[in-house]
Every structure is written in structure tokens, then in C-alpha cells.
Length: 353
Figure: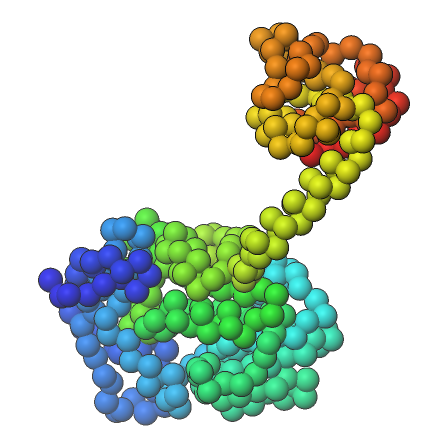
């Protein structure tokens, strides 16, 4: 067994020989029938951990060969499939980058609908559409465009040796927008025993699990997914995971509590005698805590008991005679507010923790 690791989860791969001899590229069609064809075997690595398959024999030079053919829609089904994908992406008025733009059908759609479109593809010299800014080549660290609202990479990720690195590069070119990835669905390939899907142009064969994992490693989260062509392909719309300002949010939470406490200068009621109430009331200074008039809860097991540090016994709901009520059962605030207003006839101010 080769010492090869999964490019997604770094687990050890189990080698499996699929073909003894196949063309190094399945997308090269020759004008000269006597041209020498490059062949090699195909040995893949199978990851039992994330259900990913890696082909060891990728030759990226074929993408810049004049005999490399890019796909385009040649039937109504293929055209309708593209319309479905564009509808699924559903992002308008955006700056768009399409990687591996191929025949340009998707790029032209976005360019013709008011979007600023950039494309990059090593096989394409240019497009006729003046609204498309095209770069012939690969997306790498030297590409200076961006940031973009939307990046599209349809059937690109399966062609690269380090998919996580490409996803990270895409993420670095995004603002707060989206990345649409479309790849073959490896699970359908193996369940339907389609061995011919394993051609040497594909370095990676993604399961839904391994694709989501690759995105996560690149700082991306799945927004929504789409099955394409009867699950043969999978489309995933990713968004960058925001850097959460934990300290900032905690500070705002503390400001909220302080604002609530500042209103409790006269008698108040607490609804709910669970953990939230115990924490909140327990945090109050003595002068504020002395303004606590009533604690109510529907749970009869709590009746007559006390929140920590208080001398007000918990009682069952009854008409409330304070002008302010603090609801500690925030997970049910809509239901509780309706109950207080409609069933108990409470007219005072309700503050939800």
C-alpha cells in the first residue's frame, strides 16, 4: 500500500486499481487519427473515513492542449439543467467570477443580466460578450481579481490535486458572498456501478460528506444543496463562515442585562423559576433584589420554594399587581406573552431576558 493520505481528511487511503490502461485524458479528441495517445493505468485511493476517492494519475497539462474539448449544451435537457442551476444559485446584481467557464453559457447569462462578470479558464482565449472580462489560465495566488459577491466553479474541483487549497483561495476572493460548487456525486457513481465515470481527468471523486468537509476546512459552510441529473452530480452553495466577535457579543449581552436592571427601581415580578431566573435574580444587587415582589411559575413542584438569595416564595400564576414583569422563560416568550395578556389580563410592561 502506498503511503497516501486523503486530501480531505488526511486519513490513510486504501489503493484500488480500476483500469490497467486508459487515456490520460477523456476530453482530448484528435484531428489526426495517427497522433500518439498517452495511456496510463488508473489506481485510486479510497478513504473509508469521509468516503472520498482520489485518482493518483492526474495530468493537468492536458487542459492547455489544443485537442482538449470543453462541454456545451447540445440538447433541451442540458439547457434546462443549466437554467435550473442558475435559478438555484439565485443571486442577482453581483460581481461574479466563474472558474473553468468553458463554453461560457453560465457566464453569458450573468453578464447579460446586469452582473459584472470575470471568467478564468486555461482552455478559452476569449468570449464575444463585451461584458465578460476573461483571463486565460488557472486560478492561483497570482490572480489579483476580487473580491466577488459570487464565485462559480462547475466541474472544476474534481480536476485539482488539492481541492481544499482551491476552496481556500476561492474563499479569499469572496466578500460576504457565495461560492457555488458542482461536482459529480461519487455515491451515485458507485451505487450504479458506473466504472467509466473514473476517467483520468478527475483527480477527486466527492461524496456529499467529503465535499461538505472540504468546504468546512476552507472556512465555508453549506447554505443549500441540489441534486442534478438524477443525483449524478451534486451542487452546493457555500458561504464564508463569519469570524464571530465573541467578546463584542458578550459585551452587548451585558449591556442588555444592565439596561433591564436599570428599570427595576420599583416592585417587579419574575415569570418562570428555572435556571434563567435563578441566574438573573441571583446576579442582582441587594437593593434591586429587594424590589422583587412576586415569582410565578406553572410548575407545582416549585410552588413555595425560593430562587437563590430571595425571600419571595414561588407561586402559581395569578393576577399580577406590579407595573413591570421580567420573563425569564425566553424560549417560549411569544406563548408566555400571549398567556399573560390574554389569560391573566396583565397590562404592565413585559421585559424578556
